[in-house]
Structure formats: C-alpha cells, structure tokens
Length: 336
Image (cartoon, rainbow, N blue to C red):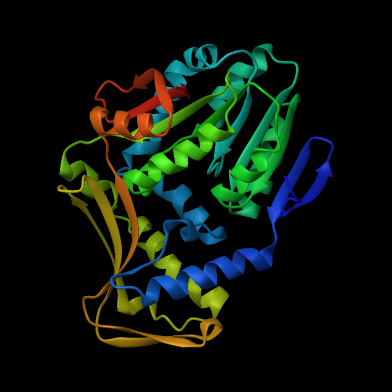
C-alpha cells in the first residue's frame, strides 16, 4: 500500500489522531486558490470554508432559525436511531466524513453503548482543533469509546481507510454535504466509499430534498448574517494564510436557489472594480463590479435523481427514514 502521508499522534490509549502534514495542506490551498481565481468564472471549492473560524461559524449556522437541515436530520436520528443501528448490523465501527462537533453521532453512540463492550469511532474532518476538542468530550461521556481521528480531506481519508480492515463498519455522511458535489462527482465519491466498504458495511447518507424555493432561500440567507460571515471568512482565510489583500467590506454574500439545476448557489460578489494581491501566490487578481467567486453548490434531490446517483456508485438503498414533511432523508446504503 505504501507509506501513509498522515502523521500519527497518540494522545492517550483511547485517542489517536492522524493528520495530513501542514505543508501539504497549505500547498493544496494555494494551488486551488490560484487555479480558481484564474478561472472564468472564478470559483473556490467549499472544502476550504472549514478552517477553525469557518467551522465555528458553521456550527452557529446549524442553530439559526432559518437553517432547517440540522434540526430536521437530528429529529430523524433521534426518532429512528435504534432502527438505524439494528439495520446496520451488530456493533459496527462508526466512520464519519465531515464529523464536525459529532453532536448527531451521539444519538447513534448512545444506542451502541447499550450493548457494545468496546466502541470505535473514526471522525474525519479537516479542522484539527474541532476533531481534538470534540473527541475529548466524547471520551469523557463514553467510557468504552476509542477514537482514531483522520484530520485530512476525504481522498486522503479513503486512502487511509483502505488500510483499516476492521468490520463491520457504518460509514456516516450526514448533513447535506453530498449536495456540495456535482451529481457526477457525487457518484464518483460514493463509488470511492463503496470501494472501501466490505460486504457487511453500510453507509448512512443524509440528503436534502427538493422543497419550496422560499424555504431554501431563507436557509442560506439567515437574518442574523451568520451564513454571510461564513462565506466571507473564505476571503479572510486567504488573507490570514496566504497574505491576501481582500477588503471584506468590498464583497457581499449572495445565495439563491437555481431551479433549473435544483441547487442553492453561494457566491461572493465584488462590489466594484478592484485588483487583489495575494502575496503567497506572487499574483494579482482583477475583479469587475458584480463579478463573483462561486464558493458552493448545494444540490437538492428528489428520489429519482438520488437513486440514479446511488446506483451509478455501485450502491443500493436498503432503508430510508425521513421527517413527516419529507424535507430531508437518511438513506442506508449497501454495496450492490
């Protein structure tokens, strides 16, 4: 398999974190920013939202009145957690992509803790502070829990998971993060997860469903401006880490539902003609007034479009749980 690019640090006998070398992470950020701001139209991948500040702001977004996905998915997990674990097989290792605070994961750990002598949890996130902080809290609350965190992007995590053979596993991809992928890329990602799955493994996939545009538009334009601050933090991160010269007051957050593509689009719009220097890139980038940086898509699925993506990934749907309004769905997938 070759040597892992992740650096292992053992904090104590129940907490082990594997982290991508910081130089590699910074190089990836530099390359993506340079490529994205040179493109037409300009764009930066949403994975770069989640530095420490961005992760904090996203946790705040999930608590806003307008942002329904987190509370709706939490309701589903709270109502059906026992059914989910029962359908997933006995005593699975939990592997979570984009673990964040792991708050929703606790609803599954609570059920597993009732009958498992030893619990294994593998949180995957690109924020080292988030993983370390919340892992410590989990270990305080679950005496039989062992954590092996992966602090890296999903591709490096999948490479690392191919070295991890313990089974059965329940992969978690909660929230509506699958919507951040283009549909063909969503199938490619799910196919990569499928390749890392054993015959007895499952994937619990959270999916935001199509609903009234006014509900979607409100969710990404909260009155308190938290989502706007989250979006603009991407420019602040470029300033902090790459020596950027962005004036955040000269850009604004824009988010809207594109009904033709069935997706929310998030952009950062330049409020006038301007040229921005980024020291680490040795380059300047020009913006016309009204020009945007496309920072995120969030696709909203119906059952037909979702089934197509899942089938193309070599997976099949075993169970679906959703809220009474059918705003959100948790899908338990298995290798086809």
